[in-house]
Amino acid sequence: MKKRLLWIAVAVLVIGAMGYWIHRHSASSAVPGSTAGGSGLRSRRGAGRGAADSGPATVDIVPVRAQNVPIYVDGLGTVQAYNTVTVQAQVSGKLISVPFKEGDEVKRGDLLAQIDPRSFKAQLDQALAKQAQDTAQLKNAEQDLQRYEGLVTSGYVSQQQLDGQRAQVAQFSAQVQADAAAVESARVQLSYTRITSPIDGRLGIRLVDVGNLVGSSGAGGIVVVTQLQPISVVFTLPEQALDQLRPAQAQSEGLRVEARSRDDQTTLAVGKLAVISNQIDQSTGTIKLKATFPNRDETLWPGQFVNVRLLVRTRQDGVVIPVAAVQRGPDGAYAYVIGADRTAQMRKIDVAQTEDNLALINSGLTPGEQVVVDGQYQLKPGAKVRVARGTPAAGGSVVHGGAAVAGAAP
Image 1 (cartoon, rainbow, N blue to C red):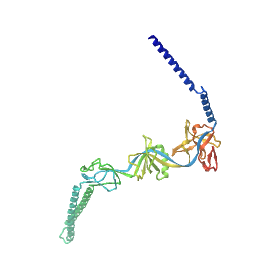
Image 2: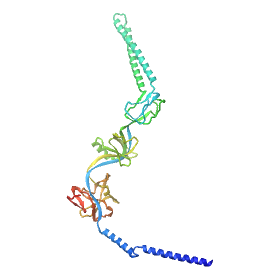
Image 3: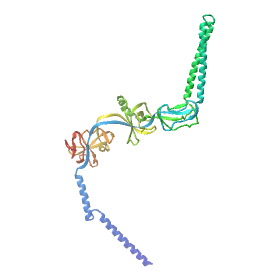
Image 4: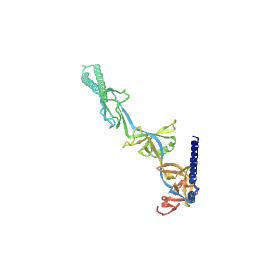
């Protein structure tokens, strides 16, 4: 037993020694420079770095341009129906008909519901009968008055009887007028049994079914009609925007307003500013505005949230560069400008806004200068560059090799 254990221990030691030797051999061959092949790899990498450091950086450039740039202010808005009416009964009665279809377009005056008209028709007939009765009495009194006026001169009728007859005619005349008003009131009440749409618009969901008793005291109504063409968007802007809004509104009858999708990628509708609220919300520091849109294709829907862009003015001959040319650093925005000597200059710039992949520059650049749009990571102030791709500069010249060559073709 002791011999067997001894042989096992010796075998374990031999196997461990062989594994250690193999591991050391593999590690030494993997180190660059430990063999001839590794030395060659290290020398090639060093040579590559030296070549990159010694040569000019390759960049793409574009010229700084001057063009008219629209200035927008942005806000978040909610679409609202231009008009919203909850249709309700004006008289009490049993609902016998609801002929509309939910979601339909309706015109003003279209029938929406019918209340049982029989009791109201009876009231009208009663008023007409009373009017006819009083009219007959008035006519008889007027005839008697004519007779009394002819007999008073001959002494057959006293003056007192004549005056009394005149008073009776006036009384019946007033009664006939009251009857006419009662007839008109009964007709109006009867007309209220036909419930029609008060506006052009789209119907919502029916709120009551046939057979129910309805009346003017009902809170729910019968249906809601919303006017979608035109339609309104109510949105808010910071109170600081008033400095731009008021002068712009004074110069234009209706400022252009765009309603855009929530991802701000699609323009849904274009309209005009309708009103600016007469006060600022002190709790939020914002001001409320309303814009009106024709909405003929009904891309806007009540309750929808949209991004709103309000055009306040257009800057004439604004200095613009591609957004790709704008770099950010600890001290703010900057861009690399390439001079005629093919050197890069770091130029601090003031960006007013970015729109449609263009940056509007307040200061720092002038039209015609060349800015780098690709390859900035290789640059530092004073670095030499080689232009891989350029675009025509102002005046018809193009950039080639870092210098503007007049009259050259792109």
